[in-house]
Image (cartoon, rainbow, N blue to C red; front, side):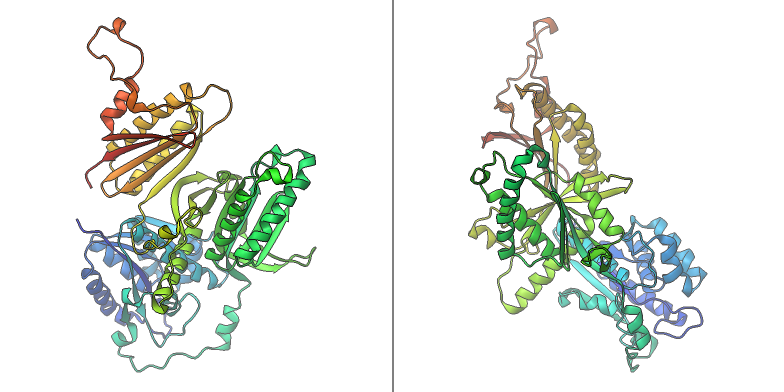
Amino acid sequence: MAAPKIVLFAGQRANDRDTPGPFPPAIEPAVRIAIRTKLESYGNLIGYASGQAGGDILFGEELLDLGGILHIHIPCERDDFISQYVAPAGQPWVDRFQRLCARAASVNVNCEERLLGDPTLIRFNNQVLQGMARLDAEARGTTAHLLLLWSPSAPAELGSPADFMDHWPEFDRLSIIDLDELSGADDAVPEPYTEAFAELSTSPRAIRAILFADIATYTNFRDDEIPLLFDLLSEAQQQVETLTRPPLLINTWGDAIHAAAETAHDLADYAAALSNAVAAIDPARYGLARSPRFRIALHAGPVFVGMHPMTGRSMIFGHHVNRAARIEPVAVPGEIFASQHFVALLRAEMDERLYEAAMTGVPYSPRYSVEYHGTVELPKQFGREAVYRLIDRHKSASPEELERPSVSEQSVPPSLHAVIRNDVAEIEPLASKVDEFCGMHGISPEVAHAVNLSLEELLTNTIHYGYSDKQEHMIEVGLTLQGSKLLVRISDDGEPYDPRQTPEPDLESDLDERQVGGLGVHLVRQLMDKIDYKRQKGRNQVVLTKSFAA
């Protein structure tokens, strides 16, 4: 079966009631036919769109009628969105919007703030839409296409279809439906940029990438070691300054860091440089027995920009700043975790850089890839968040590896990465992540159950028998989808143990004559297609392979 076509839609909003504009009610049938004609040429469909009255709703209705899957993203809470972008066109559009949401595979709210007439949130919603469509396409080994319902005579407002088109680099994957041509107004002159619109567009909010970090191992340092630790961090900061563009703002208190940048890529560069610089410094040079390990969280969204009344320094504030702060405690020490919003923006920015490089002949390979970590509960009742592990491909790559095709030129397989403690109570939450990952990627519940049973057997064995001390140990678990095979990796620092060497259990003798043990590994052999093992850098590395019907 061919991979589905990922279609991202941006469309002109229907005119408000009894108000002239580029999308009057009379041309709705022609717009519907034009959208359906485009969609029918694509085949198997997955669509991404907002839900404004007009083109968005027509696109969603036609895509679902053709058997497609629809993901809706809106920039604010549903009632606020309806009042500003659906209801002004009339109650029938509100009813259709509600029915569309009920039929959609997902309805995503990208800002839990009021719009306040601010188009900045619309632009951010468009950026997230674009990034999510690209991520979905990448996971399925295909590419995303933009379908635009555009009126050349409409003003190019912030967040408008014209603005969306300006931020879409691949014109070979862009299809346009000319609204003015459908309405017979193809000779219309674009509306001038008015002072009223200029006033509307001067927003106190701006889209920012946001970082929160702290030293997870800070409490392990004695008071007399803190000055030495700060000397080490000063050297790390000097290295960071030579490698990256400085954040727009950076604040610190104690071991905590808060930073913001204009783009996700700039902030990812800063986070990676900080993490790499600290890890590369020998702590013994500063009289320390251990290296600090940062826990770093990245997020993105519209924020309010201003000056702090007490310090006079620049600051950002708002819901997304608070949310970024809540993601940091769930990050794994030594890792960089990122929200879905951040990953979406980063994906779109890397593709834009890739396209510009192709046009100018400048070599470029995207620096970052991501692994889905899971949907986690955030502290302080901030709800749930899909988080990803950010992987710096430059960290340990050889020059030959960096010259390989970029993540946009080859499919990066969907992955799940988790770290658990040597505690059997951690196995059940891990199983939930495995079930969620398999469900997201169309892997049957039977395969997910087989994987979870195998993980339970091997992890329980490691936790009970792999450690001679009573200390806390970390066990890494990873899933990677490669076509019709699922690779399951387990890495632990326990006693050397190759499960392939476990003898087959005696299933023929009487129960009181059988040797104890071996049944768990026997079950894993029955459930999985292959077991591989190696001992590397003091860790057991087990890889299970499970094939399934695609």
